[in-house]
Length: 405
Image (cartoon, rainbow, N blue to C red; front, side, top):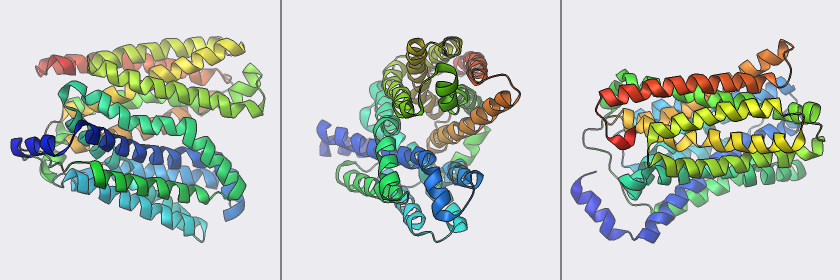
């Protein structure tokens, strides 16, 4: 964005309007969170409606995740020179299209394709939304602004997912897609109304975005995100059987247990945004260290209900504190390819989801017990601390601003 355009933005939009624009982008994050996680609670309904098996229903989740991993870098590169407000609206339009196709999908194969299409704009949307929010908030508050956008995703796990799951169970699982369409359309209207136009940096091109992949710090940051988040997913993927078989909670207690973890994620996202504005990688080191400690304590006390719940909440807080700092760090690693770098955060997040669930399942299959995934997650977080320290070393070599460290 040129100086003239920045000045124009500041004169044309009040602080209230900027706050409304960031809130609008967060509603989009809320919609994305609902479609990504609510389908997990509606698998049995999908099985009955489509006449498929439970493993096939699981592929509806995987199809979306594959769409995210592929779409994030591709659509970010294609949008390198696009005005950001327009591109955010375009991505939301693709998101709506995918859900319209999902609602009307006549068979399993069409539904798989529709879920893949729905996932394509996920990472690119969060990337452009994060860049827009950071630009509007300014350097001193950029991570907090990014935290608000990511907060929509976190809040969806506490409010949106339980509500939409209940609605889907009552009226039919496909109504989940209608609820997401409505949320996305509200986001589009609010972004169109409040968000200022933002041009990407003059030197941003599709070629510069691609060249950004050569950046060593970027790949270390991606590795950091995959390792760091995989620990959380190793625990989260198997929280239900652990809660019932080890802690002794009833199945009817699972919604509020998962909700407690979601509440921790909300707190962690906003605390992490505040901390990252002080020190980006310092926040990563502290958060990952706390994840490792709390996961060990969670697994060790899983047979004691009160302590299990306390440490589950604290795992959610510390793991989600990584979100804003990791997003900000990846943007910092590739100043000539900010959109691609920001989008890769979400590719890494979904890769961590798959990795954590896979490794956690393997240790359970090896008869190591339901606590084992949490211990594995603690090891992953400890490795993440080492990667983060290496990232700090690389950042210092680049003589980056103190805030980036």
